[in-house]
Length: 276
Length: 252
Ligand SMILES: Nc1ncnc2c1ncn2[C@@H]1O[C@H](COP(=O)(O)OP(=O)(O)OP(=O)(O)O)[C@@H](O)[C@H]1O
Ligand SMILES: [Mg+2]
Image 1 (cartoon, helix red, strand yellow):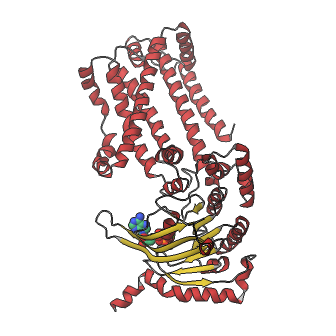
Image 2 (cartoon, rainbow over the protein chains, first blue to last red):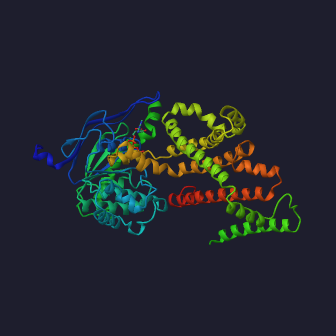
Image 3 (tube, rainbow over the protein chains, first blue to last red):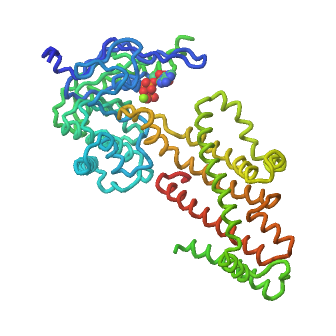
């Protein structure tokens, strides 16, 4: 291998990445992201929090190779990411991306069938992932018959079944109530431990980020940049009960300190203050 | 059968029964309407004799042809217009008002151009059906979630696979609405054209039977058209219902 041993711990990285959306139809160009530097360590759980519209989804899409950065470079497993989603990256999108014309089972099998995996292996892996995601009893159901949270699980199952080494989750539980979200958080922790994958989770919920992550990147208002990266030092075996710990309060407190001003900015208060 | 199904059947039985009763007991002049039972018998005899087979084949052949052209061409035109937003904007008012104009008035013109043949009938059928298909295609393509394109790229699918595996199934129920409308419109347009002016076909035979006071033949063929149209639409409706159930379309 040509990669230096020191880099082996770095699973994916962004260097000086910015993303500017060109203005279409007479609109001004939108500087959505960066410059951003980020090293994702192999096997870590990295949370990203930031005010709405700060460029979180843009960050994820650039990292996944779904968007070209305007400047800077993206690396995954030592290779540059260029215009294509590299093998080994799985993405769960912010929007519901389940296929309404397929059953839950066929949704989960989609990627395996595309990859030409044989029927017996497909069956084994799909049954396994559905059991793991608590969807076993809904295997024959169609997404429209499920709740929003269940549909998002279907999308997670569809991603997991391909055994990605880097899993990117874009606010997968954004539409759920706070309690359900905490429980879904436990599930995400379970899948992270079991798969051994590196996970990047975008969320707008500080408590969710604090409870799940090894490290949390707090982003500024648009154009999004990392203002602070908080290490949580949680043990690998953890669950939602840690929300009762003192350290949990300290972490969310520190995140909020960082984000309060930025969230106000993104709401437009900074502009109002300047006008006074 | 469900409760609703029984009620539906009861409505049909009562309506047909009332007509039968009214005809049999002279409330309706038999010279105007013959009893439904006699219509059915007349239809049975007509079909058994094979006299009308040529006309039946001709008319349904034209209908199938017109609908097929309207669906395929309408879909293709819809795809092209969808890819050209400016053109779409320009055409929008035409689509919106298209069915306000009785396209039928152009039938004599087409007969004048193409002669008294199959062509003007097919053209009227296509012209009546195609815009419904174009509009349904535009609607269907609009409703493809944008996130599907991203999913496709995560799975490293090419343009063709993305179109066939993701976009087409996502748009399918909306496209099907277009097919359903095209079937109804095509059916009506072809029969009506034949009725007005045609060398042959069921519409023409019904029209001739009417002029000749040949009630059994006229009502037999009317019954045939009603049965076929109802059957085809029931099949299409059943498909639609299945989709609606699976995909939650049309549910509040
Ligand atoms: N295709 C695009 N063209 C132009 N501007 C865009 C495009 N996509 C996103 N933007 C803008 O870029 C900014 C960042 O968008 P992005 O979706 O990355 O933010 P986000 O942090 O994920 O927001 P949210 O919290 O709502 O999910 C927003 O202001 C958005 O309006
Ligand atoms: Mg987003």
